[in-house]
Image (cartoon, rainbow, N blue to C red; front, side, top):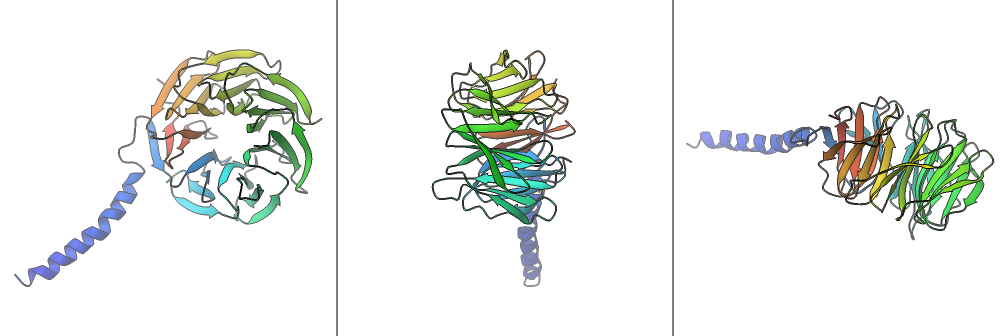
Amino acid sequence: MKKIYPYFIILLLSLALFLPFAFAQNYSTSGLPDGAKMRFGKGEIHALQFSPDGTKLAVATWMGIQIYRTSTGEEFDLLIGHSSGVNTVCYSTDGETIAGGSGNFYSDNAIRLWDAVTRNHRKTLLGHTNDINAISFSPDGRTFASASHDATVWLWDIATADPLKRLKWHMGTVTSVGFSPDGKTLVSGSEDNTVVLWDAVAREHLKTLTGHTGSVLSVGFSPDGKTIASGSEDHTLRLWDSTTGKPIDTLTGHMGFVSSVSFSPDSETIASGSWDTTVRLWDTATGMHLKTFIGHTTFVVGVDFAPDGETLASGEKGGTIFLWDAPSVE
């Protein structure tokens, strides 16, 4: 019997070492909800975006910007440097730059730019005096927009890192901002319940879109430039004609704040993430509900279609990210 004990102890030690590894290996793909392809993530999530080639996912968290490989769910880098958590993140359209915006009472309220390949810090854009809630590169990569808690939208010159203009029209915190595909128009959403269109070239106010009865939390142009989507605390997703500013449709079904929106690359589908912990897919042309993805356990704070339209990423406040099979809209 004495000769058996050493082998038995070795077996137990081997199992103790192997089981956590096996669990970690299987976590991303085991027990997935219907429609999900992968699960990963850690830390409190604030926003996320695919790289233009779809191979990476940048995630804004309280720790910094986490970069994941979308093929495996592996985190392979963490960009740090902000003096507080990162509220928002985006890639430049050429995929060469990653930007992050931060802000709270104890931070520098800065926008930091990193080289997306080397992950070296490039520039810091300073000037905001309050939280930076949303950021966006213009399609040509020359201009940068940032939305702040102080009810302003700023435009920046990327080459010099200097502010070009401070746009003031909203009467409440600006929560979201994005350029049109041709770069001529900027859209912003605010806690004053409005969506505003700006002339991004002349840098002046164009139109104010009203209809929401709660704070607008997310806005975005369709890739074909024809439609604007806005998600609100009033639990609705509204569609607007980007040229006239007139309302097209109001999509209902979420039981909580609609915190994030994203169009598919062909503009035919809209994804919405909500505080009701679900992600919904909608037909842009008809407004018909197509599918609901269920699996998150806390507020969904970000959704983004992959560039090929085959995958949808969603992230929740609690730290879990799902990659969903976007075409499965039976």
